Length: 576
Image 1 (cartoon, rainbow, N blue to C red):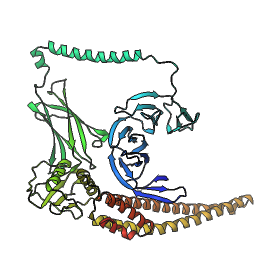
Image 2: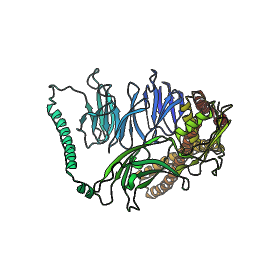
Image 3: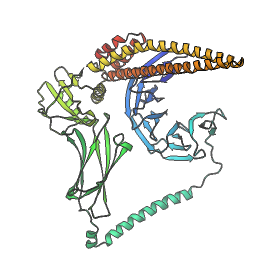
């Protein structure tokens, strides 16, 4: 079977070209690989997308999602549930199942990741011509490098048997059309690594001597010298917490130093949270003691994160700063904050209803684990209905959320107007409560109306595309005829006739260009509409779990193939 990735969809074709596999994805497919992700002996399909997500499919059912920090450009499967990935920002790394083993970042972009020279190593080929061989272990350290192609633009890399059938090599193709082959030849003589070991231990000795010198200088300082050095008080700490400002609906990272010590600067590191994965704060003007800092946190996606923070403390007059390192976890749904029961709230019109037979206390435990909750939520264990309301923050401003759970029959209703976020919440609940199969009834009037509008557009676009294609073909034929007549006029040396034909040719060429642009614009609209339809189907499938999710994708595929698009909204709403 041949697998092809397209606009929010994946197709599979057999040796006769028959379409035997189809499923939807959340975005366009940029790269794919096969890997035994769950270790069951069967290969899963892993795809990468421009929306920074890695999606793992088992048959036509999405098994897992992994969120990265930029568009995924390269994927390569390895053994032992491992696969390599590369991003558009120069990041390359390795996963084992859903756990990242390591990652590194470079100014260059990866062109190819190859399982070479053995199962415990990976060869990274960069577009700048640099080649690294790294260990697949947890560190990903470099085993060897090759820079013979440095400065050349590499466009492809692959493994092959070019010289000997039993000897694996890898081949690199550059932009100028040259093909370079590399093999893993063993050195004829054993390399003496004594000098390398001496250099390593010499560097360690140098670092230890510097530390020892710092301690000796510290002991020689008098109390007067220490006071002149503007030391911070002993026992100074930095408190790190999250604070929600309901007035401007923004989440803030708050750092506060004890003993009123001034905070001179902050460096925060987090994947996919800050541009460039880091944030630097240096005050232009220190107000008051300067012992408190607020940094706005704006999350664009529903993903858990961890911020690593380095806080620089010291008096304003001091040239020496003390560095405090802390870490803070951000829950998956940090775009929402739990509201008090008496706060103003507007109930969303859209909702999804599922049945999860668990106690209210467990629902509350899940909320506390995945949402921002800074209040003691009042809950009576004897109450049948538990209702939790959330305020949308930053990127979710004006988009409230409400979760209702009936303890007696397990009915759970999630009120929210965003189909994608509602699906993420359902998937989070299924993971937390270990639910394998879940049906759902969805009511998203705006989304389902959009589906009907897209289906009507697609029908009209099919007709327009056929008409424009026919019109363009006719005009191209007429254009070629005029070109031939103009050449004949040149042969018989009839300049008046030549001028007449070339004038007509200029007008016809303009007409053909206009027809081509109309056809291209229609095709672009068609692709965008189809992509949006596939994305809605994928989001609606995430409102279910297990077999019901797979059935929706299959039923929608059959409806589109049979030109029965009017039934799509019904499938998305009630399931199959």
